[in-house]
Length: 490
Ligand code: HEM
Image 1 (spheres, rainbow, N blue to C red):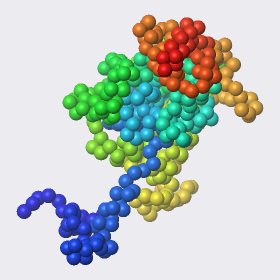
Image 2: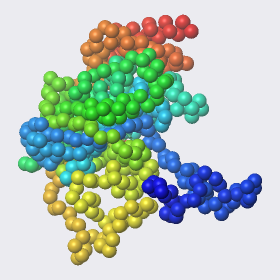
Image 3: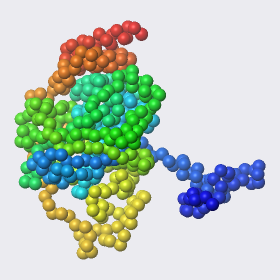
Image 4: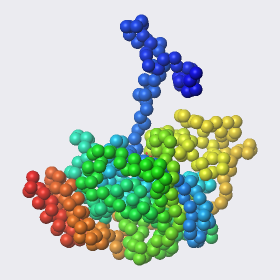
């Protein structure tokens, strides 16, 4: 007799035939009473959930973070950094931003680098990218920016007109565009790129001293890139190229790793820094704030089921733990709302109980008075009290001061960002251009002009080129020449 388990309906009843529908006689129509058939079809119809509105294409893996530096507690009381050798389980989801599910993961696009640390104080999510900066510095522009990058409402394709039109009115994106169209805009694999927390965050130590911090994950595999032509050829043949490479490397036991480093700025230094240190379109130069090593992140386990752990992962920049908090970065502030809201829509209010999302580092898991909601998976608090304060031994607050926070002043209003000496949009874009070798500059100009030359309107092209010219005169002139050449060749 077969040792294989018996196939059942969703209610657990044995299924006698999974190959033939019930019919009225051998040649007649299908019967409505065939519950197994109806259940199978109905369930299938409901397999898709809304894809992420951005970062829909992704892959994920589990691993471990281990502290290698004893210096970190000087700056933060985050328990995961408390001693050398301390290990914390992590989940990392990589992604591309603009494409919908199924789009090639080799596209020229920032890569999401979303790390979840399952700490004993709860989940800490550092939901960053493979770029240290971003296109914008204010979250109010994010929906418009993404509309310009994703599929056009009429053509249902990504349109160079929309990308460059939006850019031409958003000079603050010049730095990130230079990054994106440069060599690092397409990594060779997900293992051969760096990751960044990108924003400035706040750290608070046990003495209550506050610092500003930026996170950098430096790949231990070295940086490797794909040219536009290589990426197009690979993506055309194998749209899940990066996903496959990641899984195969881990299956071979070649565990990819990153060294976590930080830049730390004393709280008071922010006021007179040469540019606004909370501006996401800027990096902090290493000569001002050198990198300090913290630990190593290793990915060593592929999830058994993509949908369960990767599609249902709900990473949230608002997931902080004691010792870290937000800065006044306007982008970060907008994100503190956006992700939880997206999860409640995409996955539902109880998605925090799914294995990938539950705070598995916390003894006893999450404890609070939230109850009910669609698809409650656990015991829903059982007979315990569902209100607070109570006299029935329910969980209580710690009464410990959170420590994070900063002084604010001024009148509420919609303000233009920045009043520091170097708050302009072009200084760092120009510096990045001038850092490149001649072949790198050449590829950058080819990549931008190849896209810009497809734009239908001259005014959009000239506004866009003016931004690159403002960053560096030579950069702008080379682009203008290359675009005109391509347009005349048509
Ligand atoms: C995903 C909004 C800026 C990195 C998402 C999602 C939303 C969103 C709604 C989908 C979340 C989900 O359904 O699970 C925003 C808004 C932003 C912003 C409103 C600006 C105010 C950024 C920035 C970064 C970033 C600056 C990186 C520095 C990511 C990553 C994901 C993501 C990595 C994928 C998370 C995952 O793997 O599940 N964003 N985003 N986003 N975003 Fe943002």
